[in-house]
Every structure is written in structure tokens, then in C-alpha cells.
Image (cartoon, rainbow, N blue to C red; front, side):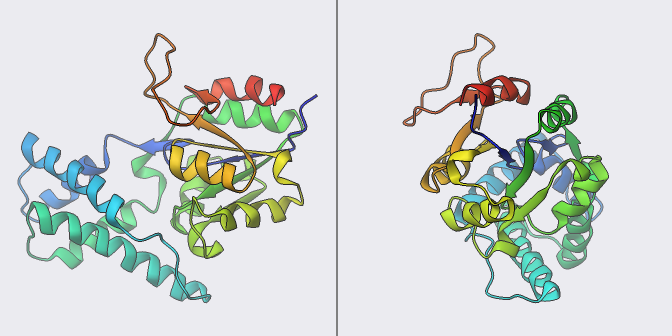
Length: 244
């Protein structure tokens, strides 16, 4: 029998996704402020966001007060979005624009569950497994989870700004393990990033599972320097867990 007692999951890109693309949502709100929407502007915006995320520092802050943490999260995102529009074209009333779009992503309106998410989570719970989230998302995640109707399915939620550590650092995984009082070998972490999720989990000695929704329909895995258990959707997770 499997020794696994806890399943940890990443949030965005694993349980749910942005409706459309990040660039589409940000461009939609920017149109109100005079930004013209074209195929070229959308492509440039998506590329600028990818670059900005790669270059950004981890969302970890040396503060403990909840109000200060939220202020730091907002400033972290402000720097990301300002960096993006500095590259693709700044516009008037950017501060007003940022405030509007930042709050828009703090609820369920621009997020959607993957079709299998709720059913698989309930199946895992029915099997007696504990569920947790380990994510570099900010404190807006709690409201998103409630809005998407899956908050009550999780026993714990561990996010970087509250843990004072971000994936792939082992500290965030260890904090999550402590909440469940389990050993690393008794836990699985599932996510869509080889570096943050799989490599991070392995550094903390958890089982790491990659969810690769872009895998070819033929079932072939993308080439990877890591030989890791890989699933295409969460539907494959219960069977995989049973073999660990």
C-alpha cells in the first residue's frame, strides 16, 4: 500500500487557470485607459509578462503584520506590471489602472477551474488523504479559492508571503509538512513547474509530480533533464499516488 498521507498541489496552472491569457485580461482593462488592442500588442504584452516574471525576485517579505504583508504583495505586483508596460508602452493614469486590475484578479471572475479539479479533489479526500496547497500566489488566493468553490476541500494552504519562503526553497515545503505532522516521504507535491514544484519538492524530500497539460495527445512526455512522474491532467493523479 502507498505510504502517502498528504497531497500538496500548486494553485494557478495546476488547479485553475486564467480565463484566456494574462495578457488578454490586462489588455482588456487597459483599453479603458486608451490602450489600443491589436494582435501585436497582445503578443508583446504576453511576452513582456513572461520576461517580467522570470526577472522578478521571489515574493518573500521581511514583515509579519498582515496589513504590511498585503502592502508588500501589492508593491511586488506593481513592479511586475509597471515593468511590463514600461516595455510595451506606458499610459496616463497607470496607478488607477493597476489598482483596478489588481483587485480584479483577487476574486474568481478571471479564473476558471480545470474541468477535473473538483472531482479529483473529492476523490482523494474520500480515500482518506489530506490535501494542502503550496503556492507562490499571494493572499488573494484565499478569496479565489472560496470563489471557485474549492476552499473547503483543503486542510491547509501555505503561500510564500506568509511562509517567508518561496518555491523552490525547501523551507516552504517543510512548513507545509509541519502543518500535517507528516514525514516528507509521506507527502506528494503536484505542480506545473519542473523548477519550482518538482525540483523544490525533491530538495525537501517529498515525492514530486509534474502536471504537463501541454503534453502531446500521443502521450509522449516532453524531454526533460529530470526523470519525474508526469501526468497530463489531475485525473491521472489518484492512480499514480496509489503506486508510490
